[in-house]
Image: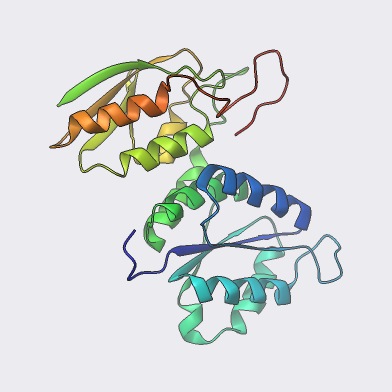
Length: 142
Length: 101
């Protein structure tokens, strides 16, 4: 990968920190350990929910190491917390953040693979969003 | 244009981790590489398109490459899909109920 560009980073937001711990491990196994991937799961006191502070910290950490950052969310109020977190960023930083309309699990895996290959934010976003139509593979019911 | 038929040997089929490996290998070559499964085709650089083929175990697929380094690309892709001995890259033996990667 060319060195003049930083990679595209990922920030995962979920109501559950445990869920993101598992998803992070899956992404690392499929895409390798070098992907810039930060997580913001659960509330500040460790309950199920989302935290604008946690999301803001994850965004800033990812922006330090990546040219652009793609955010993948789980459900509902995750987006509200993300909007609060985005408001705490400088406009120039905020412009480097994009939100994927993608399923969290499949979107994260394919986005991580594309990011590991040095793909830019457009290609990583496209890959993540195409995951919406991914079949569940071979097996019963097909 | 060069073609090669290979059989996916992994007992879990062409699963996510292996698809990622295919994308990584295909991205190293300039040739346009395609995986053909029956009537369907996937760009070998697209994980989504590969997973969309839903290729099961012991399935014969066709690798197609077009470009200056087509032969080298096919060699590398075939090695990725039919490794001489797969050291459990994707799955545990069929008797087990768990599947890795």
